[in-house]
Image 1: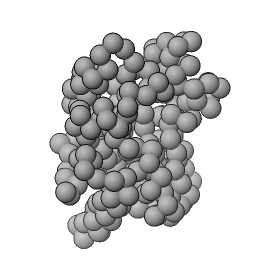
Image 2 (image 1 turned 120 degrees about the vertical axis):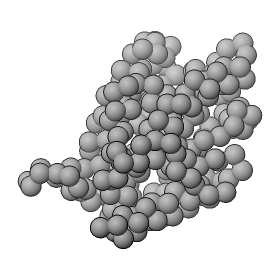
Image 3 (image 1 turned 90 degrees about the vertical axis):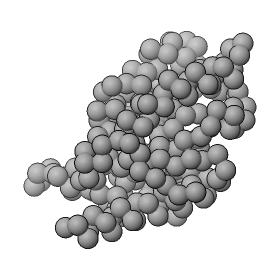
Length: 213
């Protein structure tokens, strides 16, 4: 299975530098003396799509540093995401998440993994324009099997977790595709295979960009 362009507006993202040295500054579209730092690739997708593990595999193969927005939120809050939901509610978590995504997009030059619901914020979707965003898609049965309805996924807790996951996937699918430049169906792929596909797609995009200049 190969990566295919998502239906997001490619023209809005054409200026992205898809490959860069680990830790290096991206200076595309930046004024002199004011370098712009942005991720080499942003991974999005529902719970169970493998954003963190794929991100780690990409990081190992390219040397790009990995940053996970969920980790950023937990560090800022001083508690786990499950505890944030329990103690403070989803609305508070989403505000922390939105701020963490904005900070990461502006300061991280490697692989960036977003939480499954990060794209719910219109501000975040607008901020993702101009970035290489890869949507790691999966079917509902695969998502349910991979997540195992784990206790550390508060949105999947409830009487009928399968129905909850199905509703979550259907509700978010248009938003994932709105911001995605590329989409990969991950059901039958390992994290390493998905990572190789992402890296190959980034390389192909960079070569196409060079040839068009």
